[in-house]
Length: 150
Image (cartoon, rainbow, N blue to C red):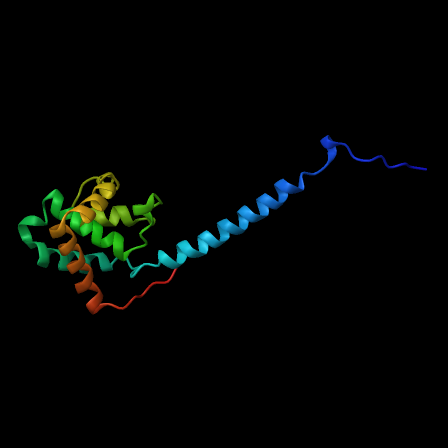
């Protein structure tokens, strides 16, 4: 006949840790739902970048489109219209960096990533930058419906 001894501290499951894990998983799930809600892009179609670029050129002018400052306006507008995860430290949608580089005629797509932090600072601190970016977005949205849900 087997006898059962009372369990010792070493062989017991730590139910407090299990409960903590459950609570953390639930919090992560809720956070992911919230992220998906606020990160819903206005467009998932990368071909729409050409339309956004045309609007950008009409607002900033032919000369400004080739300056770093000008291109950053376009980049910020695209980041607002696309899933904004890269602005919050997340990854950019697959193929977006290369498509941006192609549209802006930039040789290396790493320039796009290097400029992401700059565009946030410029948008927050410079009224003319913010005005132009908002105008680009407004003009794009005037002619396009929200076409993408994550």
